[in-house]
Image (cartoon, helix red, strand yellow):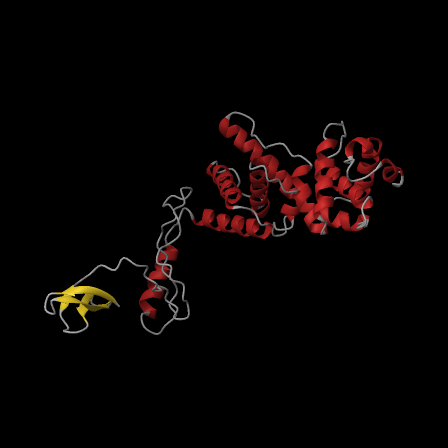
Length: 312
């Protein structure tokens, strides 16, 4: 309750607010001091059809500029009660018969969102992948191609362009059965189509070994000190002409750093965490071995420790 001046009582009295009528009433004489007031507080009312749903959301999703209608199409839901079954089911049936030009895009965007969520990607990457797919789809040349591989390739390119690259193997793990080879072909096709659209080559972004380091180290449960040493080492490795893929270099650096620490990791565990074959890690280790004294931070390992490492 709060206080207000009552004209009948000629003094300040406690007032009661009737939310249903919007009236402010004097608690002593019953005089309506104010009527039809506007309640500016939050309205925690659920507008869902299901009685068990307590979600107070009263608005729809945001508009989507990639869809013809902005994503604001009204969808008639299936009936779940006895009343209005015939009407709602008939309207829903007629709506489904109508042609929705965005139906394929909506399904594709949902698939991309699911893959992005499973990889823990941010919304900007998901939106970029949606935009890439829309540009390819507008060219009407993707019919007959593996749709799952096409969507996965869009997500791979979006990660590269947003400087948050993922390996093809990571993308393949959420691609609904599409193989690495199919995703690679789809990626080349998309890059070609986007190049034809703009008349210039598509910027994919440069991949560095450090882009994968923190995620790989997290998968292996490494300590903060070893992660810091691995990141410094992989940055210094870029100063040398080591002709290996960034992912292979990252895996080899992790192997070296863990062998110099008390928490040694088996080569098999590193291979599983990074997706790099054990043989590839050994070959990358062989290429890095001559430069270890300049790559490994001095605060992490001494010359004697480096000499004790197994020779490749």
